Image (tube, rainbow, N blue to C red; front, side, top):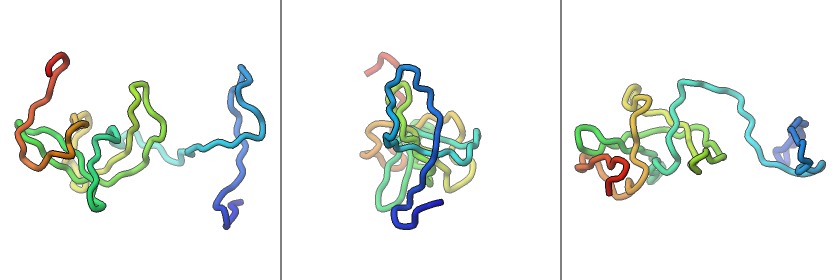
Length: 125
């Protein structure tokens, strides 16, 4: 039952603790996944540009930048093996951003629509 004042509730979880690093009575912050969808798109959090409540990601099409307005979904609080945080996104226009489309993750705060750009490959500066 949820406490209306604190908006909290107690749960019991079983966590492997062979090395005895965890102690009873401790507190934890966690996310409970209530739904999973393999079709959901996610981008690195640093790829999202937010201004005045509008969220966008930039991609390169035909040598120029293109801003795609998105709605943010679940933010993965944990970092991946490369130290990146990911956030689910949904485009305002269906099909505007396809799976596996590279998004710009640095310098995008200085970008605008239709700015000439190119993808830097490994080893290029």
